[in-house]
Length: 311
Image (cartoon, rainbow, N blue to C red; front, side, top):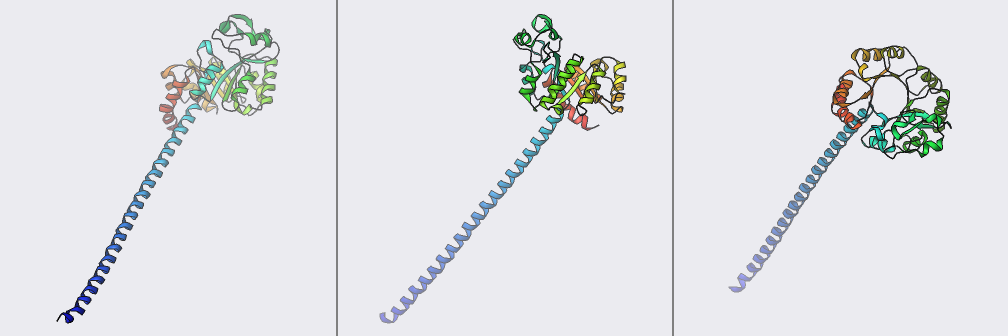
């Protein structure tokens, strides 16, 4: 009897063995499927996260590009008057650097000439207000001017020093204070030496001087400074003039239309405070001079960009 059961025991063990093998294979295969599913889900999550990162980066880049565009547009309208200065620091590297740090790309230089024929940067034709030296620059040698220090301890800059420091990083808005031939020739010579006529807007109160510069530098924009209505009326009919710049009280709607209808840009000087700057934007003033570059650029970015683009 025991011998008859023996084969069945062996068969049963073999069957259980093969069943165990089959179950093991099925469990292992299912585990691999689950593991693959987990890997696939993880990969999908990684892809989604990567897509989100790309989207965020694109949105950030777009926002950054828009901000850069707005800042560039704002700076295109604002001139740092004498470097956006306080009186004791005007036309100094201290003030120029600060204006640039605030976002200015156009900075004004007033130029005078020395007895030696060198161009210096000064609003006044003498050194009395800034340094207490009651002498005209035109009567002083270079060595005498170079020794002068303002009440703030600043030197009187040569125009060449300004060109050397800033190169092509800014646009120079240069007023010729003296209109004699020596000044015009010295300016012409220096600009040709540096080859930076494309970086300069020439400004002057005198049409004859701007006409001479038009012959020498036809591609250099000419800005005509106007203290009265008669000057404005003359400027709009002059082919040599590209920009009409008026004293703040002449910044009117009628003059804005008059200048723009003549195909020229409208400019104003010197605007102070939020009300004047907002009014300039409302009137479509293209370029204006201000002592407060930081304020002007902030208003241009927040108010001017949308206002100007609505027109």
